[in-house]
Image 1: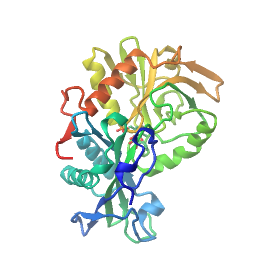
Image 2: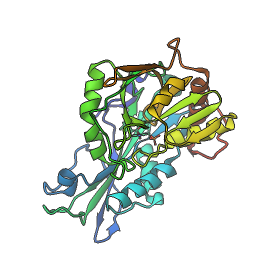
Image 3: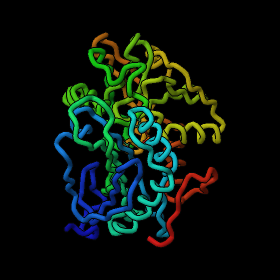
Image 4: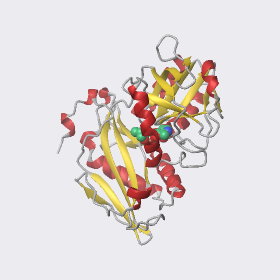
Length: 344
Ligand code: PLP
Ligand code: COI
């Protein structure tokens, strides 16, 4: 077993490090059972499980941060619980009530407290809730049994560039999600659909793919595993689309933008508006804010330069700093976003 104390906190990428424990619970006969604590990172499930064949699974991603004051803060976990319930309704899985989700969170943090990175490292503890359809069946229908589990792993920056602006690509030959499909749910199939284009883009030196709406290819959807926003003058502009994941980070940035006196526009964003943005970024739990350097529309042979000097812009910087400060406890939690732990 790896001890949290031995990790090189400052140089963690966004990888998987085993931790001490995870927590699990099963849904059987129409109800969720008791928690089980496991020190194994293996699971045993029937080979005819619906999650393996028909993609009946959902996951979430949230983070815990250790502050300068030694306390631990988790950012908006109730929102993740609610989004997981939304996903459950979307793909016919049972909903895990918010209080059960929070119970799992409290347990998994206490059981793995040595893995919560220290304040100075800038790293955090990534929390991964997962729900999978079990059951033994080959017909395409919802399972009768499910497993929910929550594990944690310490992480650093998701994009190698961190807060340095990086180039992103539009690849019109690929879609991530159909307009009335599962794009708004956090299900594995959406990520499977994005793997091919994501790897192609990385191989060409891009940090992410910016997906356009699948129907008309006119509007920006999102940036791989993160939402998109653009800044023009004093406006924070972010896509409204039925096929994107409703990002909790984006929702928070919209509030912070408003707090800073910006106007927030959540509406369809035409791809050609890229030419008009002073700044732009990808935002999400893993990505935090990853400023965008340039967007290359590869099939149209067009390039939109966003950051003229290669640096993050002032508004992206202010939003990033405010968000991080709230998460680490360096700025007052005026919106009641943080779940605080004094005993970790
Ligand atoms: N969009 C996609 C496809 C994602 O996977 C994520 C990550 O969770 C996000 C957006 C950002 O969402 P959040 O800010 O809730 O992490
Ligand atoms: C997150 O930001 O939490 C994500 O889920 C993105 C990715 C790692 C899938």
